[in-house]
Length: 273
Ligand SMILES: Cc1cc2nc3c(=O)[nH]c(=O)nc-3n(C[C@H](O)[C@H](O)[C@H](O)COP(=O)(O)OP(=O)(O)OC[C@H]3O[C@@H](n4cnc5c(N)ncnc54)[C@H](O)[C@@H]3O)c2cc1C
Ligand code: FES
Image (cartoon, rainbow, N blue to C red):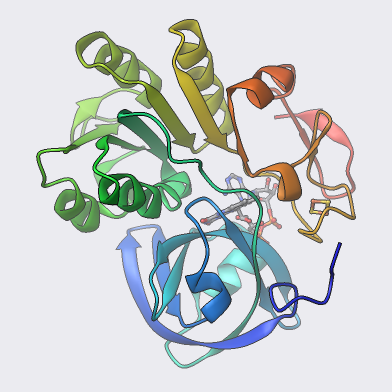
């Protein structure tokens, strides 16, 4: 493996803009040529000196600039969440295998921060004239990110936007897998993409496989090196930072004993989710 490629060298980037994406998420825009060449579903390692380095999906991929969208959890994400336009971040990547563009009519199912990589994926699928149903899920209306962008993006013959919230404050009341199940009964879907909480992905994967529909899921696990060396991101026999983060139906079947059930902590110990 060539470790000293430009992708692996940390670049220092200035934050060009910060936007509130929902009540609990912010989007940070920066310019970086390597990231502008990324495909939907790839991720970067974002470094905040003296704090942490952690993986984030690219939520916007354009030639002049790219974005990441974050929800504050602990040290790293809290620290990024407080940063402002003009401040500096370190960036490595893009890394991993993103989504493969397949099928004529795709359903994209996203929950919470898992919606981030689905926005550039929807753009890529629509640019190839494929049908896209974007199903976005959150606990409540104020936590649904990318509403304005998703509404604009899906405002075409080939696009449909479906919202679901646990409390019914906007869209269908209930959880995304149930809404996907009824969608599959009404519309011909031949490809499912999912990213979000692992219990949600587990249900979407099971549902798709049971109906014989191909599925790709983007998994979020602890990642440290992002270049396949440290082993912190192992799922089954797969090294997620290198073989994923997007897994296809065959790979998902291989890791079904872990998906939505088991994870690894920061020391690599397996524990239940
Ligand atoms: C490929 C990939 C893409 C990712 N993309 C995004 C993204 O676009 N936006 C984003 O906000 N996050 C994303 N994440 C998750 C992100 O890397 C973590 O949120 C990050 O590690 C947070 O660092 P921290 O220091 O704040 O929390 P940590 O110290 O890493 O975690 C503290 C605690 O919070 C829990 N936790 C952290 N993040 C999450 C989460 N997202 N969901 C549930 N529990 C969590 C951990 O299990 C841990 O117990 C992605 C992860 C991967 C692997
Ligand atoms: S994060 Fe180190 S092997 Fe994947």
